[in-house]
Amino acid sequence: MAEETPFKAHEGKETEGPLIKTYVLERFISKFIDILIMGAFFAFPTAVGPLAGTTYILISDGLQGGSIGKRIIGLKAVSLDDPTTQCDFKQSIIRNSVFALLIVIYYILGWIPYLGKVIVFLSWVAVLGMEMVLIYTDDLGERFGDRIAGTIVIKGQKASDTGS
Figure (cartoon, rainbow, N blue to C red):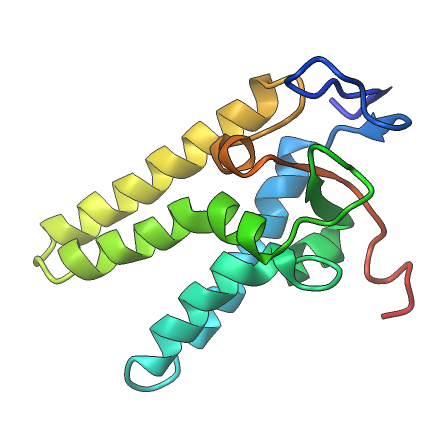
């Protein structure tokens, strides 16, 4: 739950000051907003749309201020080593690569009538379900992508609070 307790890094060192662990629902909604934005890119003609959508999902957390979904909900992805530093493009690509992989699965299996779409849908449900369980059960609220990228999602300022 959202308690104000200091997170401990995996190496056992505490971070500077108390950080507030985010709710699973907040993270789900922010990722849902980002996936809607990605889907809007897919409406562009030819291969430009899917390429733009996949690129957005991969680099979104490295954008200044974080992804649009995180800005709206009031979250930010930061480096686990230094929670005052926003995650960079490399960390963003690493932490979101599982979602890009799901897009690749869609293009590989999605052309199979009926069964392909079912497999893709079940893949998305399985990955999102696993990620939410990890966020909920992990002391730091880290999902798989956070663990491999060395990042954590914390409460930041909402876009409406910053005047953006």
